[in-house]
Length: 303
Ligand code: 3HC
Picture (cartoon, rainbow, N blue to C red):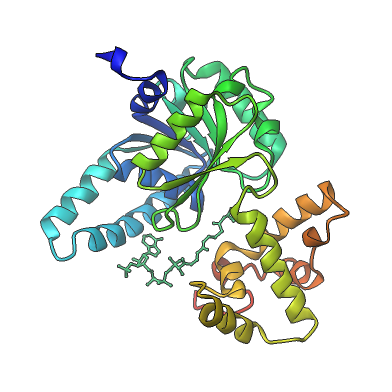
């Protein structure tokens, strides 16, 4: 009976319908994993072309997941893929897509005004019980939640790229996040196959708070001429066991993303030496050298 469940467990059990707003690298990854783990998903973007591109990316990624998960068993792999794809719907209308959502995960452009406008609209359209979450990597969750009347049902759900592979989910609480909401987000994370960690609403949460200054320290090391990018990468991979060196990782994440995060923090905390922008990185971004996605960053890539 329902009496044997705590209300948070009931809330978590109730997360069946997930709406993901934004179909970029992160949004598509979140939608994919949610569909793979049995949720009914609506992936939303304002641009139909972006949705189409995301569907292609998901189709390719899910092949890799299925191949690994069902090594050799083609029948099972095909079934897994078609069932997951069958649970994934798309839309270009955010407001219309939250009517039956139990959870909304936002992964749109990192702009506070745009995010606030979106959540304000969704707050009117979504059912009472719906939990709202942002996948922002650099903006305060509290500031986004501020425009809604459901701060107790609001939190951060921060995933890592590539979402289908990276095991971590940072679950961010603002002071108003209720215990039920927090627990429901954690249970949902586990159902997504992730390991959750609890974070406060501080810049960079846990991972980026350490990773971003480390990346910028690497660029400063390169700018001083202390070592080459390749040698720094080899050193951190073989000497510290990181899967990618800092320059490979910056190319992978996108130099524009790194610049965006540090610029925001530098503005907010000008006195913190760990948050200082880099001239070299600014120059590379201005030249369109954004990493893997543009074909060139610290390394060059075949398009
Ligand atoms: N979809 C599905 N599967 C994928 C995938 C994708 N997009 N990318 C990789 N894989 C799978 C592959 O199929 C492969 O499976 P296998 O072991 O069965 O062959 C496995 O992952 C390993 O992939 P590769 O052999 O191609 O390459 P690597 O062994 O080098 O692994 C990597 C790739 C998982 C990306 C690894 O290099 C890594 O962990 N790098 C660090 C990534 C990282 O730090 N991410 C966090 C960035 S910060 C962030 O996202 C926060 C944001 O806010 C900025």
